[in-house]
Image (cartoon, rainbow, N blue to C red; front, top):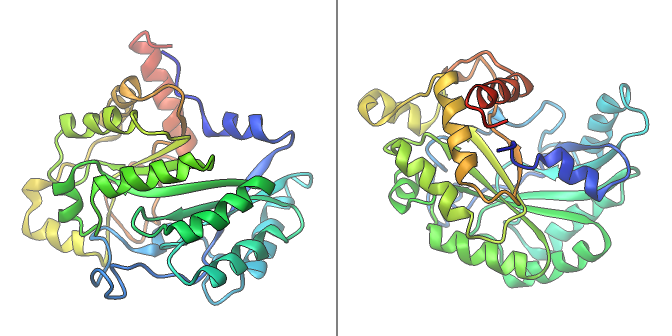
Length: 298
């Protein structure tokens, strides 16, 4: 078995040049933060863990792109860019305001596409109609935070939507020809190894383009950190080696046509409670390749 088709290979098929994602914080919120569905957000969420310094919501989309591109262009002057609307829910708002921000990004020199991170309960047909038109003239990937296929887990982490809602939205998006991805967290509280591996079987039935995984990370100043103090028995923090084998077993069950973007995420050390592996993404990928060779899968 080979490692699932890597996301970088997927991008190489789409572009004749190297591309780099630039994270954008466009100042959005979420329906389970502003009271529409709840308050406080998902139990694991602290947005400081995935927003680079140049992506601050007091800066315009153009300013964030300018600063991000300045950072990457020093090493790769010929590179092109994909604007990644990452922080919070990037389809949650008035359609005209959303489109203004998307088009501002696409108008910036060197930007050749968009990746929009969002929730499956925040994609109205009206917006999909507009996104379908963007997709016809530019690269577009919609990435849905699904996190788990188990509704009990989704309720426990205060996700605010069901897996059935995720299925329906993914199907509506893919039917329009838009590249569609999902994000999953492996190791959420209460989920056994068998539950985690069942996620691979379930999402393999969906019309997906990409899958992004990362390990559960316990972050300071989150509701999940409080839950851990009260009920540590429902948590299992995988060691790096355990998680390597989990990812390989997950891949064995996953549709091989999907492009796998990543296995792990790195939160700032000053915010991370557990687990602290001290591994960069590429180092973890090398550990997976080594272990697959040991298991005679490469």
